[in-house]
View (spheres, rainbow, N blue to C red):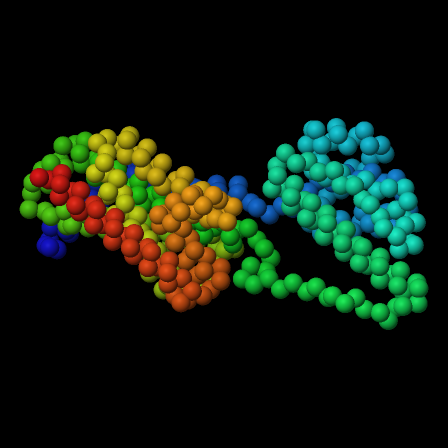
Length: 377
């Protein structure tokens, strides 16, 4: 292997990138743009749920119950209605997500310690949001029920009695349950995977379209030297893009790296080597930039978004789809990234993911060399 030949190819590639603003913009500006778009658009935090209330009781108890929904940022009282016929119209037009119906005997039953039935009419057109809203309603109702039970005991002269269960949740790693801490690592995986694969694929296919690829293959340059010379410049650019994404994530979304920066750099480097090798492998299957763009987009964007655990949990997928996800490097890089950024743990916690990324990088690199050798014969 000749270092001079590799450096010559690297210099040539860097010159081509510097003379092509579109490619440079795709590698540096597009990742930042995607981070901003996805980061602000995708938010799994369901807050400020629009609430309508139909209070048939109109007592101090019912008013106190309604106020318990407004003491947090999860519910906003949109309107108070006076008949049930208005509920359908509010839900049909999307003005509210939840409508509470308080019965006429609410206050009397609460005061007497009897069972009370509250109706919550929920818009189920979005199943995820509806399920979250139902969970919030149940939590608020359970809290009010517990406080009402304690008051009834005090009125009965049992004020010294304590409930047997004191639930005190302690959430680790993400105490505020911010979706940004969960989503930003997935965005990093998606963006780096797409840009790294796409850049190397288009780089080699561009040589084919210009007719220079055949000259390179018959020259003394070996396939491994060609791959290194073509991928190292994009590896450096991808690392710069990754640093920019991390800095922007901290500045705009407050997402920090809790673990070791060295661990993060090593895992990212291994992941990028695998992605760049995969891009070279796809370039050997394409003869035009249009085909290369379509092929790399189909094999990186959708699989990484759907099957890496970015948004959709693996346990909800069919077994066959779960098996396919094991072939994707994004699955392992995302697990390692969340372990480093969110949990702040070391290599001992994600060693299996690093091993899988090394296998993927070696496999794509080896297959790329074999494919280029076969095309050069």
